[in-house]
Image (cartoon, rainbow, N blue to C red; front, side, top):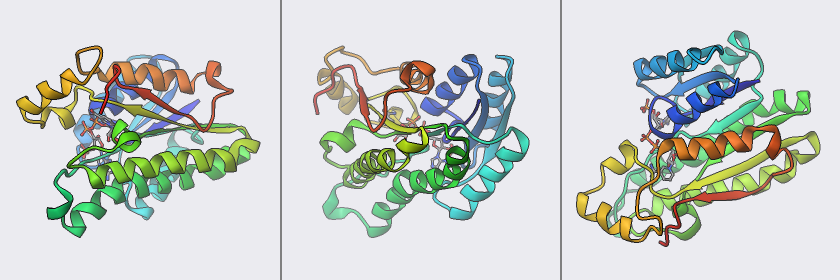
Amino acid sequence: MIALVTGASRGIGAAIAVKLAGDGWSIAVVCRKERELAEEVASLCRNCGVQAEAYAADVSREEDCRQLVEAVRTALGPITLLVNNAGMNRDGLCLRMSREQFTSVIDTNLTGTFLMCRSVLPDMIKARQGRIINITSVAGLYGNAGQVNYAASKAGVIGLTRSLSKEVASRQVTVNAVAPGLIETDMTAAMPDKIREQAKEAIALGRLGKPEEVAGLVAYLASPAAAYITGQIIEISGGLVL
Ligand code: NDP
């Protein structure tokens, strides 16, 4: 039971790594550059009595993904659960968005998800078992002003999830996505207070979600109880209406 979680140095990814460790998974904690934070998360995972190692890799780089999966296989074993959580946003209105601002977000959120899936699939297919859980967003389902790059990347992840689930189901590999609404992390802390308050009014439960709440859903999708779920996009947004 080896799980690799990208973007696990903080926020939702860190909560997922610790929750899965509590459920008995050995964990590869992956960040892009904040290696010390990833080491701290790996140490929290080890406190749960499982093996855990920290890695730095940029998921938008093909060679990084290949080397990462190889290093994890050597240190912990073949990956049976991949959580594609690494993500970024660079918000702005379409009219003023540079091509680089658009493609950098696609490269990490969508191409990174593709590259990581492609890197782990040979081991999963060989083992005739595996779980892939992609973190998308309500922005990918409904769109959001100021986020054409981010929403397009997350809508792409939804299409990737549904398509890949159909390619690998016969090998007993499931592929699902989780679509959070607004969750309390560094990403939403960067929002201006006024926008945050306005956003809260659009949430039926009247508050932002916690990373641990998203982690609970991911842990369920990784568990034996979810063996018959594939190709699904599950929203966790407190009833947010965009
Ligand atoms: P944070 O900004 O708090 O953390 C992002 C994580 O992704 C960090 O660990 C960062 O590593 C890593 N990362 C970013 N780019 C890359 C890259 N190219 N390669 C490898 N790692 C990378 O994000 P959140 O915890 O808020 O979000 C996690 C996921 O959930 C994202 O996919 C996000 O889009 C999605 N989401 C978040 C919502 C929210 O409200 N917070 C709502 C809906 C979806 P490092 O620090 O080393 O750069």
